[in-house]
Image (cartoon, rainbow, N blue to C red):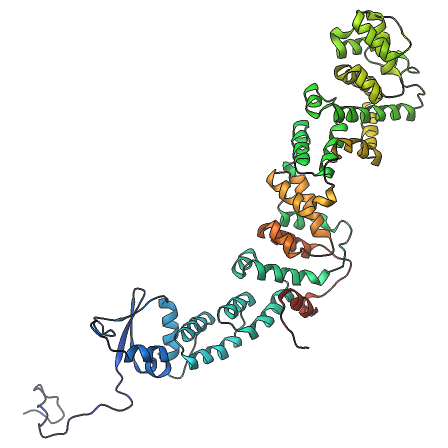
Length: 500
């Protein structure tokens, strides 16, 4: 016999037909609905969608017409244009799985805010707007969120955080913010040092060079590279760059080859050779020689003068005797094959202290002019090559030398008119690292930050480098970024009205 406390194996008896039927609870008999978002199914009570969103309320009350009613497991309600991650975050707010807790991350609140705004869940939107400011978040994320949801009151505090923090705006963050906002924030940050010049030589620190990313070890000063740079300078109207090339050619230790001189043309060749010649004359005077080679004993010369003349002029050397006008004497000697006259004429032009004039050079012609300049240089270099190079370098740096070299650049614009931004673009396009660095440093060191127009011309990569480098340069005053009032700059750059 079975005990009263032991369970019975028999099935329960059916309810008495006369017993009252159970009824649905008015509050907690919830109808479920199934959603399909991306490739995931979500099944939740339908009620909150109806009571808190006019969008869903309208959707659910519309008659299905000829189509199959949606919302069941077999025929879920498909939500297009949203992510499963965002929808799950919304459901975490609507249907928390833990009693008494509602713990969401910033990203989850932002997802919930996104869908609450889209589907007009006004209470959930307000809840998100109250919760999100309590998180310590990257101000860039705050700016992006404020922009997405038109939260104007969030913008100014986030801007202040970006410009006051020590960390520079990363390239990735700048790209996410967009051109106008990123440049604006960099301009506001740069206003900290507006009008404050950099300390002398402050730009030469290695971290500045690393930021700018210019490898000056790639620069070359060989003759062919100088000619390439000169062509670029002339093509783009860079007068200062062209003068730099001319001076560099003028101070080459070895004599310039015929190919190089032919490439330069008559005017430029004459001026470069003239500078080298004037430098050698100055060296002779500094050593106390009154008449260049005439006061030197032959022991100062490692090769006889006539040997040098013959090596330079070759077959042009013929028998010649003396004439009054040395240039005319040379011309007559050439015409009549008078070797003695020709040699004496060459010797006189090579030994005299005065350099060839432009008129003499034109009368003598290209080859003879170049030959005489070369011979004059060879004679003087043999005496003391080191002093000769010092003298040439000194002469090439004199202002009037630049004027002479620039005579055939009269049609070019000046370096100031071209501008540093244009110089950067040309230097980058032609891989001129040394000139690129110089132009970069010009913008980095100046007291005023880049303008919006300059930023647009430079492009984001160069703009980002220059603003970063500007913050690294020591200035003539120490200012604490975290304590500085950036509001006037923010108001100017972004046009935000800030109440005092």
